[in-house]
Image 1: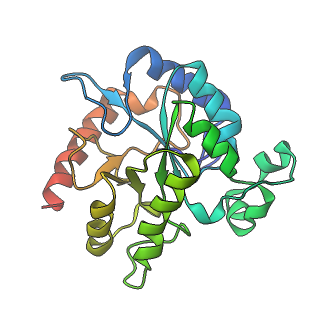
Image 2 (image 1 turned 120 degrees about the vertical axis):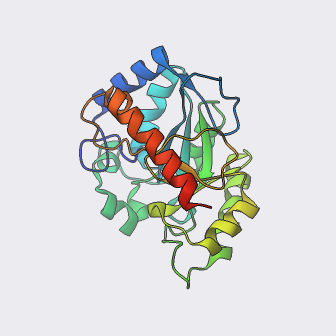
Length: 236
């Protein structure tokens, strides 16, 4: 799970992402939700949240370069038909500014999303309508869970089979509704998954990586396996 292609708490510099992708491409099997998983081999599903413009400008070219594929989770309320801002201005927007002022172009436009969806390198996922937390009892689940699927399917001409919970937060009510609408449902959780059939799929936080191979160290892999078993216990 990644957010920005820039240095900071919620991102990685482009050169780190490039080295990370090169390592994945040469070492692991890159999959999208629903792809067969090879027994005894680690498969890696890349997922980016929010749909910032730096995904289109930086990550998308790297996916093509290394022949990788990724899930891009988009909150539809921030997407615009077009923006007039220069690319450098769009790239330099802080995340908080991007959400506060979507017209300034901090996120991908509909045309950019459609281009990436048509490339074969990017699968679009729903990420709520407003990017609001869905563990609140007052959350409007019809708007946040149902509407994004219809809108995205129409705009990017691609099936929308995955939902990614904003902030990794869900309730039993929102999880049940998400499972009824989407084939694959994701949150943050720092664990491995043994297959695609889980009620809730967990993702490893890859923001602010110490190095391009750090997520796959033996100690980390042991930790992910331990979290997998803990998640199975607590989800019963």
